[in-house]
Length: 111
Image (tube, rainbow, N blue to C red; front, side, top):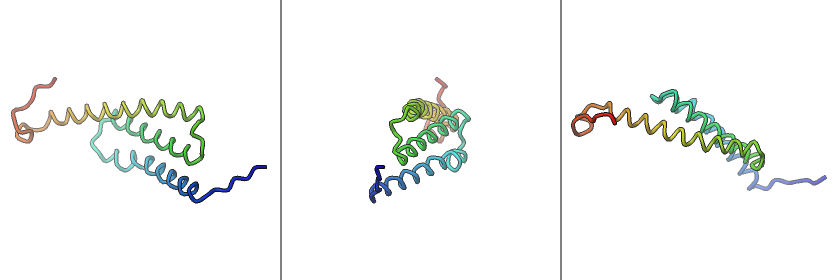
């Protein structure tokens, strides 16, 4: 049987990836939920950060080439685009609602 001894770099990489997993999992429950986000933005962000966590978990377990990780990355790619677009639209709508004096001019007409 082949024995594999983990070196210091392997251990540090695994620990770092597991801490990153914890951070990504915590973001939706600590940061995103405290922001005035729409359900659409919150769902997109939660999906994105969860798929990021799954990527780093796979990296920690040396399972990055599996078909599940390929599917995870496709989902992650879609969710990051969804998150960016949804968050952008939310910010644009919030900017339109700000009083004219805070914006430095007359109110804008919606596009």
